[in-house]
Image 1: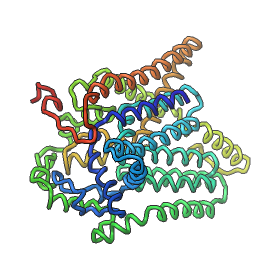
Image 2 (image 1 turned 180 degrees about the horizontal axis):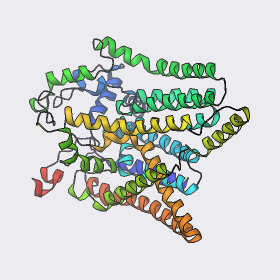
Image 3 (image 1 turned 90 degrees about the vertical axis):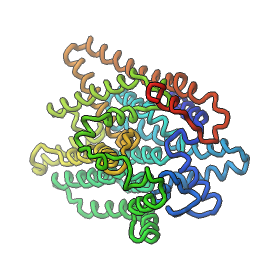
Image 4 (image 1 turned 180 degrees about the vertical axis):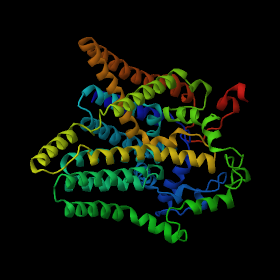
Amino acid sequence: MFFFVFILGTWLFWAFLLPLNEGPDENMRLQIAQFILKYGKLPTGYQKEIMDYTWGFTYAFRPILPQMVEALFIGLAMLFTENAFALLFAGRLVSVLSGVVFFWYVWALGGLLFERRSLRWVFLLLNVCLPQSCLLFTYLNCDSAALMASAMILYYLARGMKDDFSIRTCVWLGVSLSLCVLSYYNAYGFLITAALVFAGCFLERARNGEKCGKEFFGKGLLILGLVLALTGWWFVRNYVLYEGDFLGLRTQEECAELYAMDLFKPSGRRNCINMGMSLTDMLFRSDWAILVFKGFVGVLAPLTEAHRAWIFGGYGGLFFIGGTGVLISCVRGLGRNFGSGSRERIRQRKTEASKAGAGKGSVDVSQICLHLGLVTAVALPNVLNIWYSYSNDYQPQGRYSMPMLVPFLYYVTRGLGYWGQWLREKWGARGARWRSGLGRLVCLWMILVLVYSTIGIMWPAYRDVEDKAEVRVYSLEELFGEERR
């Protein structure tokens, strides 16, 4: 609880400290909430009042559930104040509350995934102390809702593997998937994850001799029906408004071609195809990958001083060590099961199946489907990020890959746990003490990074801003440093 108060206080402080639009595209999100408040209806993508004439489009073409809730929060705040920044802060509370839900679901998920309490802490801190993760929970965006939904989805999938997808679990899974659908397209890989895990669990039960076909279709239709009921209206609305374009993406590009500045029209944007660069060149012969990595860890201010090599190096080292650990454990056939609860259920079923003479073979279908789903949730945002930079607009941004956060850090934590177990097996009691000490150092280092990010980066960057409700204009020196002017 003390740690939660610390994290919540950090998020609230950042939300209070940030001037308007320091989070990417925040002003465009705010305009949607303001339109809803002013007119009492949802805007269309063509709405002139919220159009950004640099890029030539609005975010109203895409799902805007977070902005609908932000409009509610701002409207409630207007009953008490007319201060512009106070109203902006009220809207930002939606992202902060998304972070609160995210925190508790990640903590609960860690309890299902990891038997060792130390790994639960590492998993939690990796998710909530990562600077970019913290930043997303402090300004108006859709990414925070997507992260919240991803944690909820994985938690209810883990619960479903433990309780055979009870009705309550299915209902909450349907709600979580609906939040994902109405938040951010880059997070849609979790829809595939949910389908694979759900189907895999019932396939494994059927393989072990259980008759569960009716249960599979009944519960599957319950989840699907909930998702369609809660989200279908948005895509029907898009289909009607945009001549069959139910996602709104094609119409957004057509709008940008009409209204954007010439430099930013889709036909003239700076991307690798227009520059004659191959995909291989972009990934391996440019700075794209390193910039995405830095953005994923967190570049918190547009000042040269904000770039700290020791932060990027430390998190890069954790990701590398965890990644190698999980790869080695896969080769050795370790750590294949998704949490202690699922392991108990799997052992129980295999015992029952062996008594009944069913379930031949040692391969667990549910675990195969689980990891296929998790890998999909990790891979899809990165594939979309790569393709967007290559074919549409060259923007090497780590936040486009952020939906992979929870499953990616699950594997990193598993890999770190593998090395801890290796220390114990190799050196016995001495190795166990080393494991405990190193684990504490890793957790302390992540907390210190967050503290430093607050007092060493965010506070110096924004403490002297007088009007935080105005969009801040930077000089080239402030953006890039004098050497790149």
